[in-house]
Every structure is written in C-alpha cells, then in structure tokens.
Length: 189
Image 1 (cartoon, helix red, strand yellow):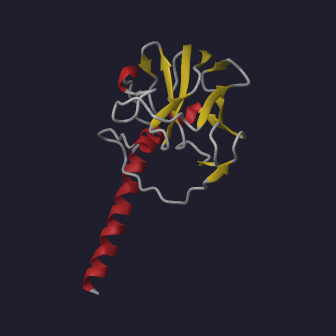
Image 2 (spheres, helix red, strand yellow):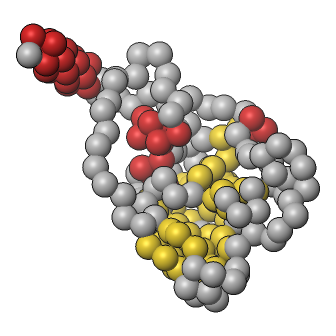
Image 3 (cartoon, helix red, strand yellow):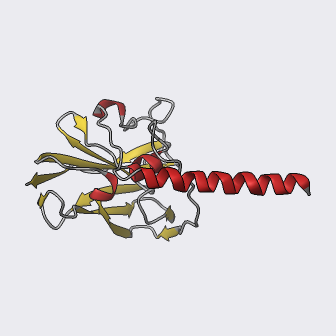
C-alpha cells in the first residue's frame, strides 16, 4: 500500500510539472530540418531490399485551392485507395500518414504538435502526456477514404513562397512507405 501511494504522488507531481511547463510555453517551438533527412525510403523495404509484393494502397493529395494567405487555414485532402485484394486498416487523423511540407530543399518548421506525433521533441519543449483512443476503420477492396487535414496544425508557415506537400504511409504487407503525388501550394502575405 505504501508503494501505491508513492506512485500516485509521483504521477501527480509529474502532471503538475507538465502544466507548469506548458504555461511557460506561449509560442510553439519550430525547427527547419533538411528535407533529405526526413523521407523514408520509397520503393525499398525498411531493410533496403526491393519489395516482393506490391503495396496494398495508393495515396493522393488535393486541395480546393492552390493559393493561401499567411494565417489562413491551409487545408489539404488526403485520399487513400485500397488497391489490394483484402480490406486494409485506416485510422483517420494526423498520425495515420506522414505529411512533409518543403519550401525549396528545407522542410518547413514543425509545430510542437507535429513533433510530438513523430516523437521528435526538442530541448525546452514542454513535457506532454497524451492519452485517448484511436478509431480504426477498414477500407474495402477498390474503395477510397478521404480526410481533410489542416497543415497549420503540423507546420508553422510564416513566410510567403511556394511549398511542396507530400504524404507517406507505411504498408506492413509490402514493408514499404507509399508516397503520394506532390501537391504545390503558394502562400502569400
């Protein structure tokens, strides 16, 4: 029983410490990272071999507009099509696909939320504890599912220019990362 009380006290202390750190953090911390260090190998398995089976799905990106203003929501539509021979799992949300936004050779600065999704916390970032459930749906053969994502939730885009957006999703059956088309968007002041 004594050990149980100690654990509860430690959890409470950690929880209050997180809130104190979050209160100090008003601005999201961002970092530009060279794009070449971000992409998973496409067309190769994680071990670098050529896959023996084709991916079970394809990805595509689209947007209702190709031009946005700084501060305006930048919404894209991610569509996954089941091209396999059986149902595939899909979890709507920001963590089902990996979105990369680049301006030239550099990736745009990621928000704290995006870094947390990828497990890439920077020194000085507030400690956050996430919890909850995840909804997983099945996509029937030859069917598609789409979802709209707001790039502002993932990236801190404050400079005008032309940006390239790409999505990737891992396919366990073929052991490859499937890449979408590149979507080009213009951001103006």
